[in-house]
Each structure stands twice: as structure tokens, then as C-alpha cells.
Image 1 (cartoon, each protein chain N blue to C red):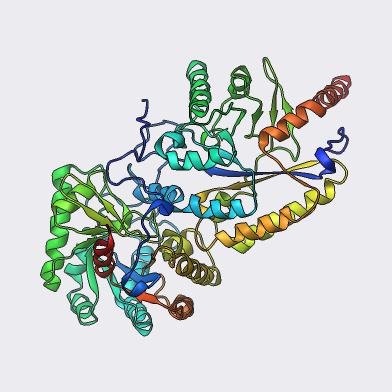
Image 2: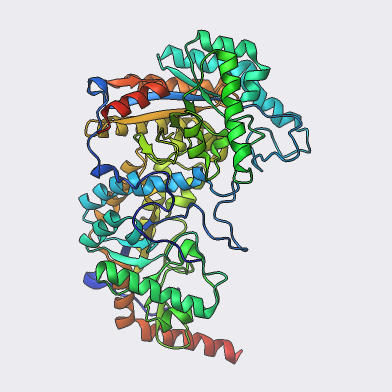
Length: 295
Length: 303
């Protein structure tokens, strides 16, 4: 970070903010995956875990939507694409608002971890086709289903024509990802500014608001030198709860109340980066490699 | 295995229903928010049968000790001996009708308590056999039907009333549970915490009504699993009630507190519940309910 080329966002913005509601379906009786059990609490079904998340689609999503609308947020919805098929009302609400739909796989209970290359190629085609059929949108990027992935994932994403990958948590800026062919960049997502890990343990709504404000304050200061990215990851089944929803309003009020914020979608961030900074970043990475090689 | 990606749920227990698309729900006298308590009397056996299934990390106790885990077992039994009375006193002070989920082994081993619950006007709902014998898909259909029937028989023997409500031990079901409950004459089930209003479930043996509990303010979920502070829990309850009360003017809501006597019945915790209830019950137009009253009102207004 210390010696990189500078990133300049549109209109002199210091922080590119993307807001990512995770719109998900966890299956009632998911197929067995030897490496990961989505419902470890009991033999399947786990009606408690299932219902907790189902709440998001029945109630929480709609309460969150009102707040997001009040703030005119252009979301990048991390979507299990089967949501468009199971819950057309939700799909239509997102499409009508012009939200960008980012793939979050088909279901949150089907993982990429053990997939063969051929199955993963078919998976991308399914994601691309499903999104296009329901919204006309071209699929631009992915956060792996339940953040699952494998060593081949970036190559296969690039091969399928996707532009950005959100599974990389290693930076405050986009990063070029080396792939066999084509171009892929990471757009940093967050497992810190994310209601799941925050509310997994004892934190409450006001803690989450403080975390978001403090994160933003730091990035806003640093962004005066070179642009930063901030992701806000939300889940309707958590943030759409009646005792949490005011927190969303408060954090959006605060962050969007700053002038030099670019409230963008993930693909807008990726496209801007590729157009203006990608080559410089690659050159910079090569120069670091040369320093390394010389030692 | 490719999934069936047709519209609606991936099971046949109920339909998808986004809340804003429903007809506005109205409680009697236009009350915006119904409030009730589901108190759990869960019996943990010292020596459960070999083939019984229980949660791997059941709450209570200190660290997982070799069986018999005196610390966990007696921590939980505190609820049956002490906590339940403290909890009932507090709920009664705020005139909140109490619905109690009682498992069959509690009914068997605590006859005095059963009589006492009757005298205090508690509604009793079925709660399986024991928290150390969960209903899961590992059970065959015949065994599960028998478990449900035995649980209801035992409660009827102990109280003279056959329950019409049900909460599965630890909220764990098999994929057949709703239809077997309907066949056993159960009218409402509390296993699906996915809504702020009751809704209709369909089974091959007739309809059930789902009474969704509020998982995030469930004492075990919030205080034991998430380790939220009591101040945080109190604040959760109060802010959720305010929001549901205000949203309830558009379409009525309910709020069902799931409370465990061994947990919230501890002397230091009861004070947080007391403070929270004082604020919730001071809201105008709160309707205090038993589970069955809520379900009756829902089924009368459901068009």
C-alpha cells in the first residue's frame, strides 16, 4: 500500500462505497457435501437455522428495502441466483431498482470447494443465464456461494467472462488477480463490516454502527491520498430485524453524509479501476517482483 | 443433484409470503402488538437411552464433562426447582399470560409443578419426551408418531387437558413432523422462527398454524449462544417491541418471548427481564396473549 500508484475515483471521491445485501436461499434439505455441512446443529432438516434465514426473505428484506430506498442506495446484491426463481417478488424488487446483481452462487448450501472444472464451468453458465433470463443483466462478478471457492476459481471466472471477484479480503483497494486468460480484479468485500460475524457474537446494533463509522473515518482520511474501497455487507435476516433496522439508517446517514463518497456498484468500481489504474498496478506488481528476484 | 428451482419454498409445509403483499392483519380491538411468553420446561436425563439424539453442544454447564455431567444437568434443573417460580412471578406482574412447553419427562417427574402451573392459569403445549431425546429424521415415521402421541398423552394425564400447541424439543424437527403433528390433533406449532405474524402451514393431514417465535431475543440464543450482555438483551427487547408496535399499526405483529427458567430465572438475569417488560408493557395497545388465543385470533381474521 505504501508505495503504490495512486487511485483517483470519479469527482475526487476519497472512498468508493459499495453496499452488498446478501439475498440468499439456504436449502431445507441440501445435498451432502463431504467437506462442509451447512446445518451442523442437528440431522437435516434444521428448521431453526432454516427459518432464521427464511425470515429474511419473508420479512427482513422488505424492511431493509424501505431504508435503502430512503437513502437511494444503489446496491450490489450478492444473490443466490435461485432467489430469482423461488422468490420472483424479491427478484423483481431488486431488478426494478436497477441494483447490480452479483452472483453469490445458486444456493448458499452448494459450494465450489469440491467442484470439478467442468462442473464449475457449467455453474458459471447457469449463473450467467439465470441472471440474464430474469433481469437482462450481464453477470459481472461473484462472491462465492457462502464464500466458497477453490484454486481454479479465478481462472474459470475469467474464462466465463466475469470481471471481478469479491472473495479477496486482503486489501482496501482493487487488486489485479493473475489468471490464465483475460482480466480479473478483486473488489474488496468485508467480513468485518458484515452483520454475520458482528452478530454471531455478543455485539449489538450500536457496536456495528460504531464499527462502520470508525472504518469509514479512517478510510476517508486515507482516501485523501489515494482512493479507498469500503464494502458494507448486510443480510436481511439479521439487519432487517426490528431491533437492528435503525442502525442501518444511522450508518447510511453518516457515511452518505460525507461529500467525497462515491456510492458505486462493485462493477463500476472494477471498471473504473481497470480503465484507469489496472496497468499501473500490474507494472507496480512486476517491479516488486523484480526487486524480489534481484535479491 | 439438480434442485427444483420452481417458484416458492423448497418444501411443501407452507407457501412463500412476503409480508408487504399480505392483507393487513388486525388483532381484536385494533391492537398493534400481541405479546406472550413461551416458557420451556426441558428435562435432561442423567442416563438417556443409547439411541437417543441430543444436541452436541447443549447449553448449560461449564465445559463439556464426561457423563453424567453434574454441572450441566443441575444447572438446567435449577429451572424446575427455583427459576420457574421467579419467572412466573415476573411475567404475572406484567399480566403476561404464560404458555409453557412441557416435555413428557417433566410431566412425569414433577407432578406438583404440573398442578401448580394449572393453578396459575398457564397454557401447556407439547414439547416431546425430553431434551435428551430429540425428534429428528433419524427416527422412523412410526416411532415419531408414537413419541408425539406419548408426549400429548402424558400432558393430558398430568393436567386433564390435551394440548393444541407444540414446540419440538430444542426446536428440532424431522421433515415429517408437521404432518404428524396435524394427524395428532395439534393446531399450532412454534418450531419455525421465520416471521412476525402467524401463518398457515399445510400438511396431508390438514392445516396447522405456525406461531413463529422471536429467535434473536430467545434467552438461550441471545444470552447463552451469542453471549450478549444483559443490558444489550434488554435493549434488544425494548427496541424490537417499539418497532413492531409501530409497524403493527399497518399490519399487526406478535412478539413471543422464549424463556428458560434455568437461564432467565437466575436472580441476576430476572432483573433485566423485569426492566424490559416494564418498558414493553407500557406501550399503548399491547395485547397480552396465550399461544392459543393468538392463534384463534389469527384464524378468525385470516381471510
